[in-house]
Image (cartoon, rainbow over all chains, first blue to last red; front, side, top):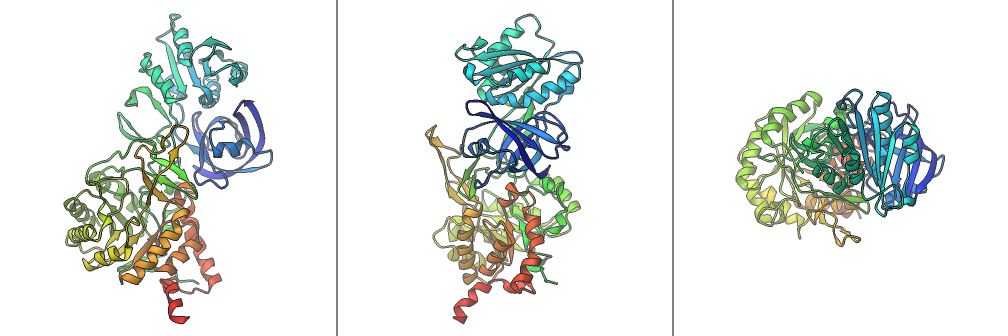
Length: 252
Length: 309
């Protein structure tokens, strides 16, 4: 972990209340997809933890949904502004768990799709197949579907109102995909609201699965014990031992 | 050359800056960023007899100029602290280690203090009778002079090492609690712990914290901490570790002038992991600017205004 100032390269709207920030700065310490950064917001006490969507040695992309005052401030940053960032934080996804030549299903609910993008790139680069199962409320909320397709992912979309893709939830897309007789060799990565992750676990994803959890955090680097959850290996800090956990490690 | 060392009941600190318990773990995360030896002492995460997972999530909430926590004394328990955490910290930090001790009964406090004091790694016991997030029959021991007296009495006899009582600000008269602890032989005081507060999620119409209430820390509480250190300094002769909202070297000097011999840095560590080092390293230049040759000489200095006006 280190603290650094990053410069805003671009800030573009992706969907209502969702935007993409590209930040320039030293990302050499980022190791794995699924790690996150903690961004200071002027005038607010706590930093805002945001997952890394993609990165290179000299820049990173963050996808952000505006939910409160901190993200509302971030939504308005412009090119050239400096952000005070702690990075990299958390463990990230373990792609070595996917069998060679196997298929990975990447299930993202809403803004939870963000860390799956760099994950998809890493999986594809290592020769695995990737299916991105992305869930939104409606067609106008859809973002990053084209980006996933452009890097070589098969993309399956669910919307709650059926205005694009399959009607229903991301869990329905995953289930539909797996009823095609392919189940048994796939590996699931998922990030999204806790009810979505719990539904996936209830649908039989009780192994070969990694979930990235989201929670309110204090420090984001393991000092305050503000985000500890119980696992089969004992207490784990979501920010430090997580945010990615194997499903069998979670006590749900 | 500014003299920065201070003395806490016979324990010498090379400077007065101490990361506060519960904001620094056992230093592991911070040791990856800087050499812990720039610090005057380290107050470790609160220790109880049994391992504790703490309260349900969410247990952190933001506030104006601060934060609420309702962690609830999560820790690995005294056995793991003695066998793993303290040896690790001893190997990475040469200065005094302050063991922050929790408990749920006078007997547990006494037994925890006895075992921790027996560790060569521990220089000072900081007895936490003020955690707002765990409940012992609805009270915490720092909330009245009588219960503070009972815990001080229980732990005083078990060790010759300095015992500092960590006091709650959630009391009517901090001076009365301070005097009660001094009267039972406490070697020093640490104040303040967090102030009880809460927040409500207006969309969900319910408290943000699963525990409903939590402890407020951060710059929001600095003036409250200063006022209480001030009052305790007037009430007792034993040394005081000032704690609450310190985020800069200026804040640390302010706390010392109110009456603190050493200063704990708490929530600042969580938003800026370099905060404690930054404060320690900023002190010499600040002291020179203020004409302070020996920092120990400014403890309680602001009280002199009453005599000179």
